[in-house]
Image (cartoon, rainbow, N blue to C red; front, side, top):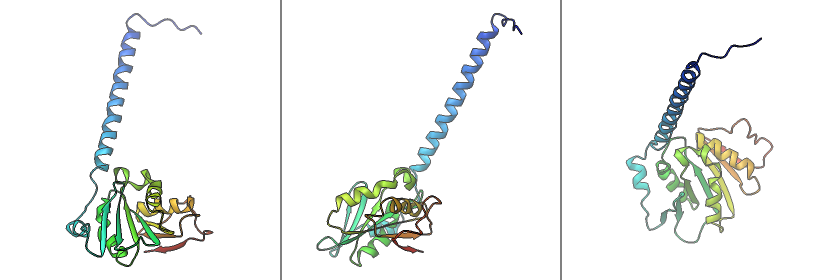
Length: 188
């Protein structure tokens, strides 16, 4: 079957329509991406109680180390540390009261700052905490909601260096089966 050539001008019009369609689709993709980034940059919290808990005291230090905030009791570095992954779209500083309470019991606690406030974009952020505190021999990871799921993923992949997992209103993702793991786990 022989297809007759398009009349002159139709090819140009078709190319122009395709160009306009591609420009509209491209603009829509950019708009959605910009909206997602703006959404991620406006997390929930922290409240006044959390901001107050960020203040150091004589018996407790609070240090913002850029990628994470460390809460530690006064004196030598504790032998056990807890790395806390925040829930999705929750400002990491919002967890200061609970981090402070755990540190007051003698543990080093690091609350990790996540890209766009989404732990799924920073699953391996615990690596930086562990590297920055070589004196800590025992590590526990955990998190709230999405942060807990990502902490479970980290714990599964780093079972040789992580001794425990804390899930706060969370559960491991389907692909992170920990049932045969030697990890000690707490779920609240």
